[in-house]
Image 1 (spheres, helix red, strand yellow):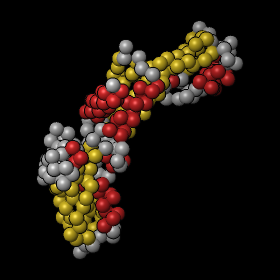
Image 2 (cartoon, rainbow, N blue to C red):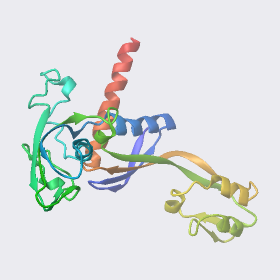
Image 3 (cartoon, helix red, strand yellow):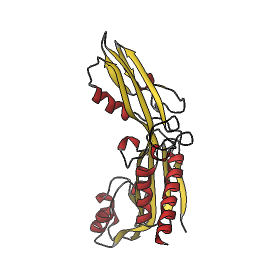
Image 4 (cartoon, rainbow, N blue to C red):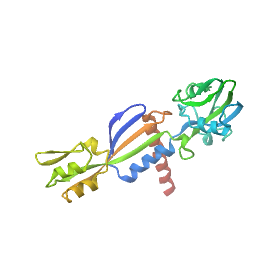
Amino acid sequence: MISIDVLESGERKLVFVLKGANAALANSLRRSVLEDVPTAAIEDIEFRKNSSVLYDEMLAHRLGLVPLTTDLQGYNMPAECKCKGERCASCTVKLTLKAEGPAVVYASDLKSKDPKVKPAYPGIPIVKLLKGQKLELEATAMLGTGKEHSKWAPGHIYYKQKTALTGNAKDPEKVVQACPPGVFEVKAGKLVPNELLLLKYDLAGAVEEASGGEAKLEPTGEYVFYLESFGQLSCRQIMEKAADVFESQLTQFIKLLK
């Protein structure tokens, strides 16, 4: 039976242990987060004035990578919208920017038509304008997924499989010296691992070599996930949406089999 133990939970960071799963399921969940969770990002820009040092294309690239807070309930994916990709108000939102130097243009200078869709980090610098230089534009943001472009990826996620120490070394101090400080200590002549530090390193080979094969780090079948949100959605929203999409894909797969 699959279960989850949450070790750390916050808006921008989530750490949890996935139990009762295998590597295939763990990796499928990871890929679902990276590729299938929709977020908002700037897709098109109409430049009306740009006398800055950066070309239109360079500014467009920088603006496209600015994380925007995302309202999944308020907007549709363009391909699923009633407008059939014609980009109506149900699948797009407009943002404007108007600035004149001398000044540094920040993400906070982007003014959104919808307060729910705005730069997640207002302090991101876009470009520095010198005296007399001007920048004026209108941007169109829409939902997309990391499968289409990395600017729509909701965050960074990876996992590690937990290991457990089996056996013991005749010379446990040799194992302690072969590993990073604090990972192991010797108590009553036996190796005792620090579970938190053990997760940070891949020491299976080092332990087996230093102990002459008497001690080993064996996989437990539990996976520790680390998720860091880029700011468009909270970590909980990301995981819930990834799980929903994954379940929907499995349901569709079962129907195709029938």
